Image 1 (cartoon, rainbow, N blue to C red):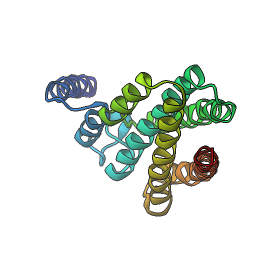
Image 2: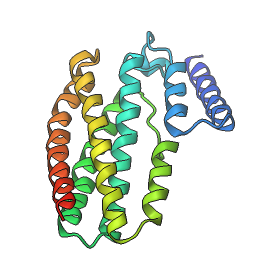
Image 3: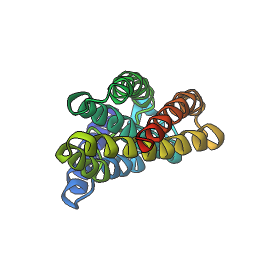
Length: 197
């Protein structure tokens, strides 16, 4: 009987996922909807419920989206930029955010939180804009995107580290915020050096 209930819940989640996608939701919104539909008060092993409060799950989907963007934009910068500082920073983005993304994926899996598999619409638009840019125009757009992205991500991490209910996600946010803050300081220095040229 429990297996039938579990299969039914998976089928319902799949239908919900399809319905959400057909309503034009992006990957993050779809993940948030799936997580909201999970019964957080239930035993996760038996019913497929989520073992974290909804606010913490929303933090996880937002963190996953921004982490994915940092890696994807970093790969673009490694291909397109000729600036040594930017290439070094981009390489750090791919490595540091790649590790953080993998750690977040493990946490999410343990808590049955659905993370987005692709970038959300906002980050896809930014990626398309960066893809079209070349030369110093690309460098400027990439650096500006990194400053903006890291400011938002730092705020997200600090808020979760302070207000999060799930101890594991709270600890992840606290640890990751230190790295994000270091990245932000570094990219701001690069941005300042570009303004002085």
